[in-house]
Length: 378
Image 1 (spheres, helix red, strand yellow):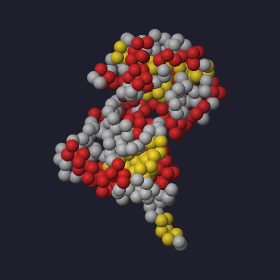
Image 2: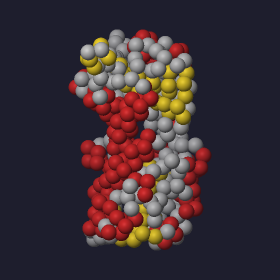
Image 3: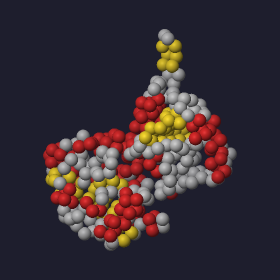
Image 4: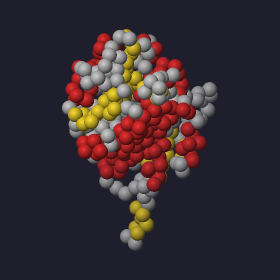
């Protein structure tokens, strides 16, 4: 059983899908591990560290040659995998709903080449799969980094400071969308001393917000709306709820110094949470960080990969937020992949064997065709 780890090719991608720690663990399972030279350099991991852990370090062709499993952070280009075994597994974040060559077209190419593509972002949110969940591990650090980016752009202090020269007021920070990233953003902003509030369409998150010491801002008296879909993700809301939320949020945003938006709906464009008119009500020098900018953005006027200014408000739209903390996010991502493969490792076959529940959820291609119901229905 050969496991290959390839160097990421996407622009700005600094993460790597394995660390010396996970290389050593794969070796203990009985796998041979090959890694492309330079794969870990941007995550502060030298080739020599992989070699010391038992991996073979080689060029791309030698790395993927006769590979049974190919690990990546993002899906590798199909034409770069020549020499892998027929039916080889490609295990990565595959962005199957993305546009162009990096999305569905790439998945179709995997199917045509006979590879079995496993999308780690489709991992079901069940108890036994928590340690395999790349969305949670990467979102956690994204929420943390979003607050640091906001602090860098804000230009004022976060905590209240009482000095002989007078008092500096605490920054007011509002988090919209309280998933893993939002909760970490709340916790980080609180540690920095900000006055924090948060909102979400899922009623169940109110207790989580308050448990972190933040103020929950929720729509009241809109009956029968919980806002939670399958797997704990947010779902699309009714027009009645959207109108009530817009009214509530508009008044609140106008009093905030910093807003961080994190709302995503799987398989659909990010919901619009903040309009240009709402941005215009904020004080000059305020900051908005849009963590959903690559999926269309929660904020009107946000631009992926740029920091723009509208009405005196900075809108931060960094791409690939997890990659901005590559060493730590790589370590977590690599453990997610190891936890996944090791959980299904069959010692007699010296290979992983997926069960139906998780296999059906994450398998996109098999036997030369698309097999995932979510893709077939799209």
